[in-house]
Image (cartoon, rainbow, N blue to C red; front, top):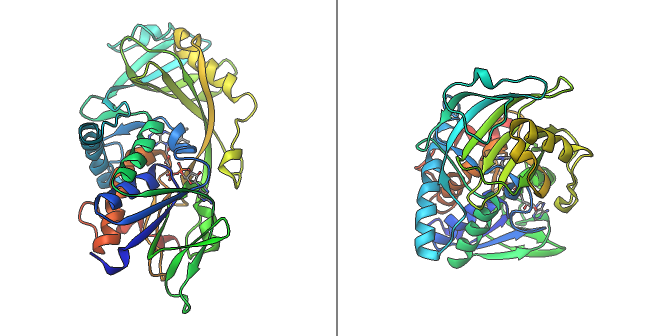
Length: 367
Ligand SMILES: Cc1cc2nc3c(=O)[nH]c(=O)nc-3n(C[C@H](O)[C@H](O)[C@H](O)COP(=O)(O)OP(=O)(O)OC[C@H]3O[C@@H](n4cnc5c(N)ncnc54)[C@H](O)[C@@H]3O)c2cc1C
């Protein structure tokens, strides 16, 4: 083991922080996760939880995604057996659909026609089957990964990371500042999602941005579950592209409505834009009247972390010993959490990774 991996502080308790903590703890590394508002309280708890094997093909993320898709199936099986943890993972078929508020599209449907879709919805194509697409409850998954990390010895500390401490020569980190107190560590990992932008003030890191999205969770369980990727023509002429994922717990998730509103410094201050919930409900109704008429259990907004080139930042912070970053996963953070966690643990403990090539994600590329 690398002599400097003896204590690791992971900043951020989203899916990325929780997965890193799990793979470090499994390897026997003393790990502390510092989280400001609650595990999975940001986008990790409010995302679709949709997973795809090969939808990143042709991009540098492909190998990470494929490895992670396999790890999801493995984790769902092993952590259920070993620790009794269950986050509603299941393979699912996925359809691309077109829908319209003003027009009847049913006649152009191709083959599959789930009974719960409305008259103005047409199926374009099956874009994933049970070998290539899957889903989970993202809040439960993130919470369970943290619980599993804790079962293997990791600690969760509630608090706000406010800065980083350095050795006297400034070459190495010695820990982080949490609520005004120094917390010592040999290594730290910045996994603050879009709030990783704060770390640009502490470390030489490229900027990370937050892109806002909205979602509803409805009490609706379709007889035939399909994940749906829709292109929807609204009455006002706007085209919306909502995603719909029915979950194992008898609920259905719908998201859409991206927005460039600025990220609040405190994750607890993220709120919905006016009218967003009504617009999402109208979108749900246009696709499936039964879905749109269902009870709304949650109205949510959150920010996905993005970088200027669209690729995640995963690796060492250039020029600063003991500092690492893992963020910027954009629309695939739930999918890529496990392989990111596995690779970061290997990088910290072994000094290198063998499961995925992290070179395309090196933060140096954007500095
Ligand atoms: C609407 C929507 C739908 C999505 N659907 C999918 C999907 O279906 N599949 C998929 O793979 N991905 C999806 N994503 C993307 C995915 O949700 C994100 O990529 C992922 O959740 C990012 O995880 P994270 O751990 O990097 O960040 P976050 O979940 O944002 O976690 C960062 C954590 O850091 C904490 N924090 C912030 N500041 C501090 C501080 N100063 N000190 C301590 N803690 C702090 C926050 O409270 C938060 O818990 C979706 C995203 C959105 C917005």
